[in-house]
Image 1 (tube, rainbow, N blue to C red):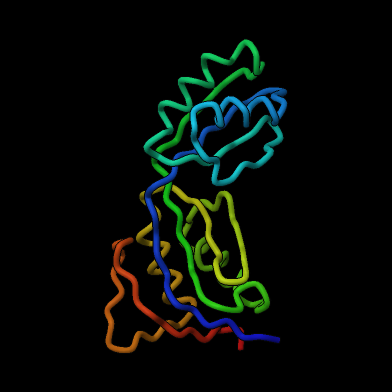
Image 2 (image 1 turned 90 degrees about the vertical axis):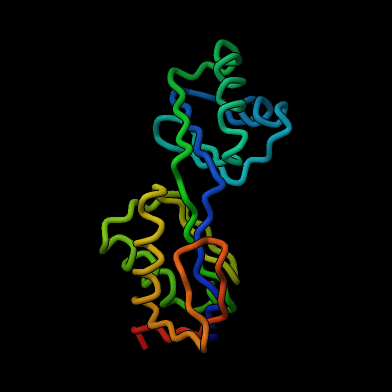
Amino acid sequence: MEQAVLHRIHSSHTHAKITVTGQVPLAPLLRAIANQQVPTYAITYRPDGWAAIVPRTTGVRVAAALQSARPHLGFTHLTLDSDIAEVAITGSGLRSDPAIRPIFCEALTRIGVTLDFMSATGNRLAVLCPDRQAAPAIRALREALEITVAGVLLTDDSSAYATVQADSKSG
């Protein structure tokens, strides 16, 4: 089993979440967003509809376009949440080390962070949460992953990055 090596913990405040409720077919929803020349970073099915992640700078425009297409799309309600942040760890072996995801989730839920839209690749683990929870989430992850930083101070500022090594508490 490959042990994970973490390179950074950071947050990004560049996303918006648009949620539509009702029986909405996915293809026309995605077409309506694509017609605005906006990429969708993620989309997920919810029991009551769909939620899509788009760039924060385009959230209002996409929401307005979807509202205009409401009769065609058939959704009952639309919400736009621009107050979300992505909290992520990057490194190597994140997917192959089975301890990383539970430590990540446990650290965040222990301090009351609302987890939404988790994504995982071999070198990145990220979750969306409310903006106000990003800084505490980063602190909790540093503590949970026992991060030691070689001569570099990590800040809660999303533009500050440092190379780190982590040893999981699970051994």
